[in-house]
Length: 256
Figure 1 (cartoon, rainbow, N blue to C red):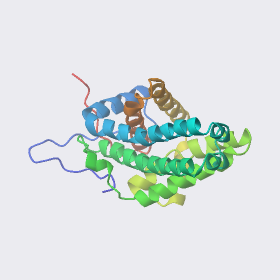
Figure 2 (figure 1 turned 90 degrees about the vertical axis):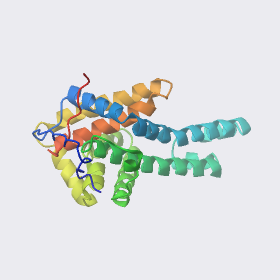
Figure 3 (figure 1 turned 60 degrees about the horizontal axis):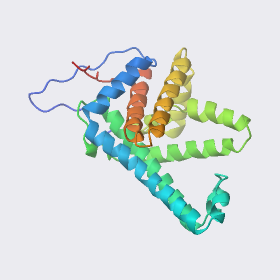
């Protein structure tokens, strides 16, 4: 399945697909839609939020254990570079690689569930683990992360370039390859043209900033808040992707 709409069971009405002009949605629209879709399918989305946090908790616990057994390892890992991670020991390096791999997979599965929520009222846990186009997504995600890491090694200018080229210009690369099986090169071109087309860039910058703040707020809420805000952010980004490209999205019924 690549995000196509499925017929509901016999006897249930087909939800009306939102008919919107291409372009970034308003903040209230995007956040409100994501909020209602999250709580309409709270079970699977919150479980995925929990799964996303498990390896980070394990890595943090391993880091504390390592620091207690060998205080010298703390200073070795403060740089945040590949060398610093290796210097903290093979166990920590392997743990970091596991967390990175887990993050890539959870990112793909979270996108898959969020994209499903844009076309189907009901999202099940199995929908998240649809591996269609997973290989394309992983390649795209790794390329973007490597590009961001390399640019980040350049003082100041590299950080700015990373924000412009990776975080902004590549805004829609991951959903394009996952949802539409688009080749990576074409996805990069499509994302670039879409982001820098007309009035899109301002709206997308603001939406990205707002959802970033939501994730930070979840982190500040004793981290537990991330279980909810990570799916919420994914839903908001999926909605933004569909609306900006003029793709069909079902409306989220408003609470009575």
